[in-house]
Amino acid sequence: MKLGIVIFPSKKLQDQANSFRKRYDPSYSLIPPHLTLKASFSASEDQIEQLTVLLDEISNNFDPFVMKTTKFSSFKPVNNVIYFKIDASEELDELQKMINEKIPSESSEYAFVPHITIGQQLSNDEHSDVYGSLRMNQFNYEETIDRFHLLYQLENGSWTVYETFRLGKE
Image 1 (cartoon, rainbow, N blue to C red):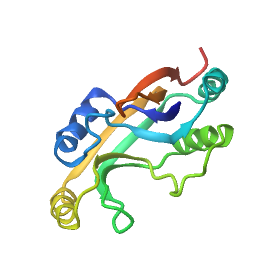
Image 2: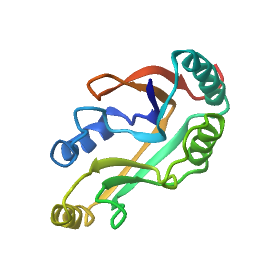
Image 3: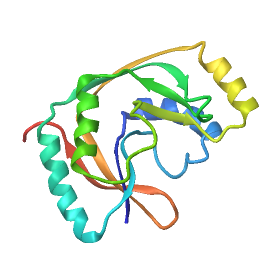
Image 4: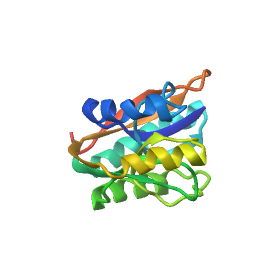
């Protein structure tokens, strides 16, 4: 089974991201706006039960934290992705690091850059036009993150929540 671990932002931030994703992200209908903590990986049914126990333990080690979004950014020239840049924070970096250390899988080809994708698979011209107009805008948003989610991929390519993990000790 194909799995992933993400943070879903508040509805307000998701609505803002979706206002762009509808036009610029072909994955719009497959998964809501999210911040990826661990990119897709495979696990068997037996491994998923162990994973949920492990993720529950990890979630107990972290308190809720503030996530700040301040601007639009891009991964160009590596690829034509436009995103909401999430300001780095010690809590977010440590959470992502611990999840990836405790759940081994193929290592990612990219360093962890906290972001919420709003456009991808754009042509060079389209990327240039869209990013050129968006990067002039300030985008200041702040919210408290108190959970993350283990997702699994359905046969149609869409993703859905398998289990949610609340940050902090119960």
